[in-house]
Amino acid sequence: MKIRLVFDDWKKDYKSVYNTEKGVDLSMGPFHSGTTFEAEIDLHESEEKELKKAMEEGFVPHFYVIPNKKKRTSLNIPINF
Image 1 (cartoon, rainbow, N blue to C red):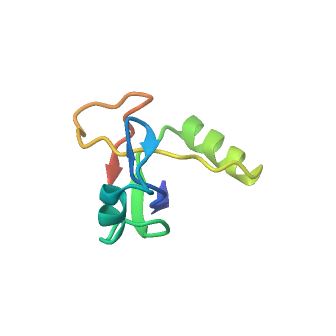
Image 2 (cartoon, rainbow, N blue to C red; image 1 turned 90 degrees about the vertical axis):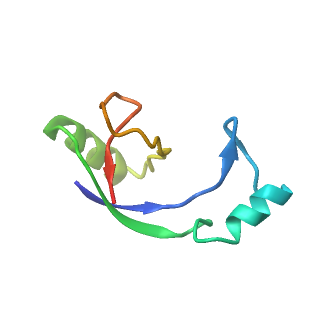
């Protein structure tokens, strides 16, 4: 499924660092709120159907990036840039 990834925020320990010195520094680079990337995720047909249905109903999924692409789990969906 082709998607657009929209960068949301930098977090550490699942908390935003936006209002910190490091957060400001990180946000000055190419990864800041609203930066968009073309991507593709590998989904089973039923997963894609579920995702599309939820988005059609106005829900917005949020993902985080895990640099290991070796195995796929419910928390580790391969993202190909």
